[in-house]
Length: 475
Image (cartoon, rainbow, N blue to C red):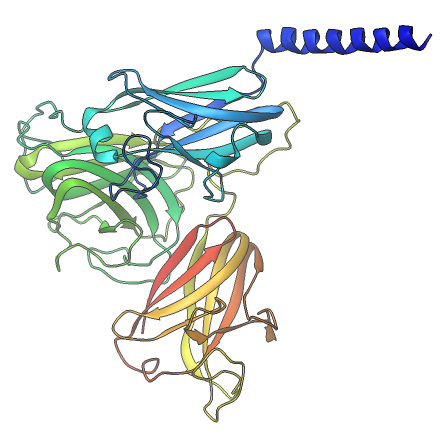
């Protein structure tokens, strides 16, 4: 009798395995719902060939979104279908492909079992972005799952080395047309990032602040040239068309350019630009944040040496409440020049400049201890969704730094909300949930620079997903 039961159990197991194999033959465990070339990251994650260690060359970064009810990945393969070059996470691959999760952690060592539920976002890095951008081509990402099934998606990178086609001539000082191509730089990536980070434009033709976080665009350029003009035109979304540029003679408000994510303007005194492009250069473009641009699309025009232009449309998904989604619903695909926006874009700005108050709780060290000198209070306004895991304030014209980071060596920063301390009482770190907007007070000890005129301090807020929001403070 026991023998019959054992045989029956074995038969059920065999039938179960057969059913599983039959099922996976017809459908993959997951799908690739988004695949795009980021182009504007300046990260070095992989070395040449099969070396995973960085080699000093920024890598090509791609965004990948995987969805499925539940499953596990066993690896990725990236192919340039034009040049036939291939990168893989598999052991012994000729060219290594480095993969990070949505927290920025490398997960190569976790293959062949990387679990996902409903949807998961990854970044994949292939060595030497300059070479990849120069050759361009059609790229295919293949996701491999633990059941043996696969899913794939494709995207195209325009070859940066190829000169642009000639366009009708205009006067070279305005980005409204072009003369025949005479230079080699090419726009390889562009994205609208939303408001927040810096307030460099006051809505006029001059550099200045009006306490509204600017709208940010990020672009990546490849080749050898000089960028001499920029124009951004917003349209659609039920709002009037609006234009910003760097041309001193127009009445349009200014586009401020900085290196990627930085706060130092590259414009001249009259707003004009002449920015050298060598090999690769990543830039941020900032326009006044007084208007709501959340539902508008953009036309970006770049003017290069000799009057040659590059133009592209930047589309965005209007920020709207996210509807409830069933377990088998598919997330919105991510495509080139399109990102799914948060319900509330992140931003930080000064609400009240530092003033000395009748408190003495911090000193010239990491200790919460009175030292006989009254503290300074700096009030900031934070907007976004997530949790703030660190705040720092760094002098940009000399020495001086305060933060909430344990064992950093900087002077202690105490953070208060509604007059109550939010720092951890042991190591003074912070973890501050933000849902919409909130006001925080920073208590710091003056090192002799807080009361000076023409002060320049960089305020940095680090979120729980690794994103950093910055604001250049002046008073």
